[in-house]
Length: 280
Image (cartoon, rainbow, N blue to C red; front, side, top):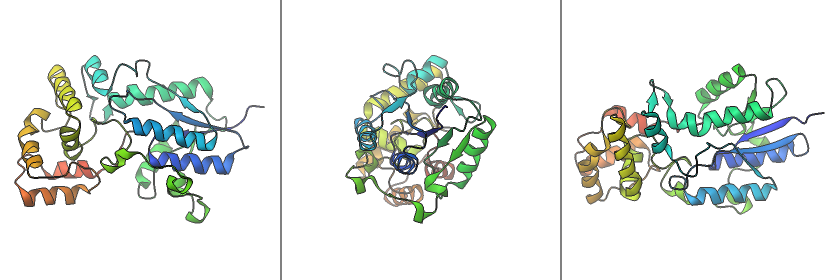
């Protein structure tokens, strides 16, 4: 008899690690537990995220299952965009998410599971992301799969862990700057993220600029990265900390108090305030 699969969307972020631990503690021995990850090119995925993924998997005594984009070792999100001559298709379909994550995820499901076979897919959305929970549950149900969201839906009294530090594993160091464990130079991100990239990863900044020039379209809706350099340079000289750990409203309000930033609109602030939407 085929074992039921518990498939954890294991991104390398802290939330996905907590989900992995909760699912393993609840279902160990009751079916196969799969930590499903997509390796991302080392130039844009922090090495400490890769360390974190390994340590949590080792703690659980589970191997990481990889569903990788075929050229992940040599291509990052900008290479994928340039190869396809676009950053997005329409207003929502971001090519790097599709190629690097969604397509390998669907192929892995097709190769290793069947709709309606009892497979449950687990996500790390939290209690403040009910709209995302509903949207993802609907999409996966349409594909014939059940989903669960331990951080959002399991009662607090049923939870067993709230930080990996409880088991001696430090979250990724990148959380000191960025609010997610996805690619540095995120094509879905707003100006607050890109200011951090400008200050901390000039190599990625320059590659993103070259991608915009090659494709002939900007990553963000209203501005090319090159057009933001004067403002970002002024912000850096004024001592504005390059971080996503400060809420967007506060970050930009504090910035405006110290200097006039010409290209930041309310739309930009709202984009920065949104949660990361890069999912499998």
